[in-house]
Length: 394
Image (cartoon, rainbow, N blue to C red; front, side, top):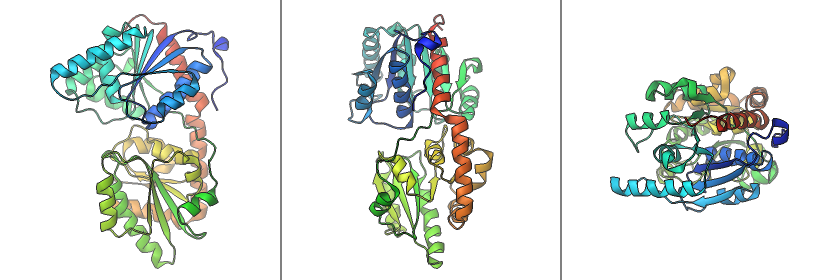
């Protein structure tokens, strides 16, 4: 549910403002979903005029969701490939396209949009620019020094975790005075299907235990360590007469063939389901006993926070973004990166103890309500945009 504070109640700081939000495209990851939630608030309650500019025309759900909020959608295809001259021509084309939209406030989310806006902002005529940092991966598109220079051109940098703020300041020389930490809102839709329907779809019997990982299949996630850990889990549980199934939810994004090949080599057939991208995330989570999130690096892992919001215990990799997501109490169920045995042991502790699972899950849900409710996080972002929109050119 969106916050109920209206533009008139807040003084209408953003009413009528022309905001252009640059996204990678229509295909949705966590950052894009967060952005679209904020756009809906800006249009429906703040009465801002928002246009989303997408850098890819690859089909996805983003355009449809934006249309429901009343935002406009423009696609200006741009790929960071080819010669330096080709990139320059593409950047100029994007800059001029943004200029036609006459943005008073420019917002970018994720790596490519941030870099592009850093280069083209002078062409756009935008008075202020908000850089949205969602990860701690850096970039191979430009040199480290160039990334730092582009970063310092932003009026404000919004990060999704405290560790991301430290990383930008220490690695790239970002001005800490311009960095704002605003946790991403966690908002789960009502389930499309109930627990029984989902468990039937997954081929689960009443006594079976179900674990899921929600993450697209790409190199940034560590599905390989998870699969090795899962081999340990099913070996031990099967010896106790218990069947367990791991559901992997996420669209193919480069590593799917390697993950499927490893699953076959490890003999996980019958205990592993590849679901592809799942729209009914709430329904899936409601059918699970446990969530796991194995990743090499995270800003603030949505693959952890969404299951937490659903009241699930979470096992994961002990990297800063996941450690910050689960908090001090949840950190006891994290294993070192690449430690398949440690990840398996953490899952086994929780799978064998339903009372502990419920206690940890309830504590997780409470943490998310206090820290990442849509009301509090969205209000903070809107207030920041309103403040930024009144600044002189940074």
